[in-house]
Amino acid sequence: MSETYASSTVRTVVGVLLLAVGVAVFAVRLIHEGAYAFPRGGNLFGGVGALLLGSALLAPHAPRWLGWLALAGSPVVLFFGLYATMAELEETISLYATDSSGRPAELRLWIVDREDGEWVGMPLAKAVEHALDGARLDMLRKGEVRCVIPRLFEDRPTSTAIHQMKLDKYAVARRSAALGFYPSEARETTVALRLDACAE
Image 1 (cartoon, rainbow, N blue to C red):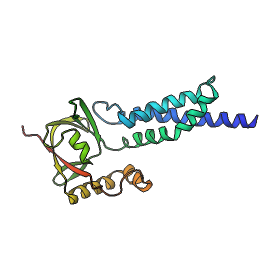
Image 2 (tube, rainbow, N blue to C red; image 1 turned 180 degrees about the horizontal axis):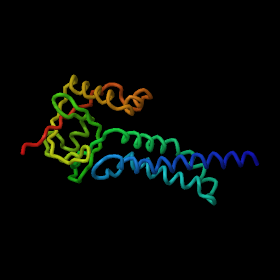
Image 3 (cartoon, one colour; image 1 turned 90 degrees about the vertical axis):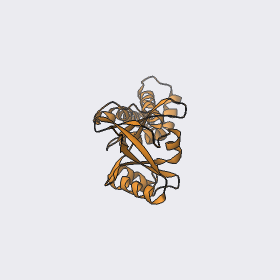
Image 4 (tube, rainbow, N blue to C red; image 1 turned 45 degrees about the vertical axis):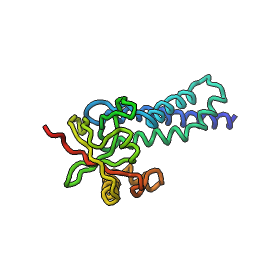
């Protein structure tokens, strides 16, 4: 009987935690001014997955196998959900671009300010996939949408400097780097983009 009670307690605690994380993935984006940035990719997986697994664990008449399956999948879903939530706790911008298929894409990025402008960093493949270099794009920052033209810099000193500035600015990046979930140094494939204002 105590074993059954313990199992029920664990399922309840994990289920409530999953539901809370699932809601947080969507709700945390409301802290930012401007248009709501709907989660995509791994962020969406973490949010929806947490809500589904949490509901399965808390369902009173759910099959036992479903509960065990939900418990087994919860670490992966929690990782994605927590990272998606924490990444939005500090300043995040949206770049409205298109992907290689021509479909609209909203890129959520950390941004840093340097004396020569606003900068973001990302893998080169991502910048190429969305044809960012030299494109005229709308950027949402602090509730204001304005036109910017990303200029791509592949040189190591620039990408390293911008990456370090992100680590200095974002606590989530520093903590994730300490845990090995985020690079502590710019990778060879990392590039920096300066977001220049469009000419009127």
